[in-house]
View (cartoon, rainbow, N blue to C red):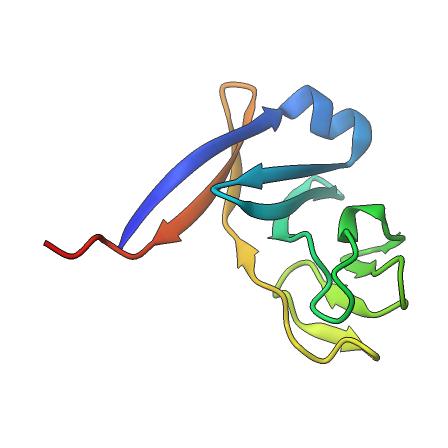
Length: 110
C-alpha cells in the first residue's frame, strides 16, 4: 500500500467557499471546512450519485441534494434514508496554503 498527498486547491479558496469539489485519480472528492476543521469525503452520494458538495450542510452532516440522504463528514456514515451505504472519507490537511487530500492505493505487483 502506498499513500500520496494530492494538492486539490488553495486554502484561501476553501476558506471562501467552505467546500471544494475535486477529482483525484478519477475519484470525485468533496472537501469541506466546518468550524475550522477539514473533512474530505467521496463526493458522490452512495444512493443516487448526486454531488454532495451541492447539498445542504448542517454542522457535520451533508444532505444529498437529490433524495435528501444524510452523511456524517467525520466518518462517512450514512445517517439518513434513503442512503444506507457509507461514503469513503479521506485524510485532508493544509500545507503552505494548499489543501492536500491523502489517497491510499494498493501497491503494484512485482
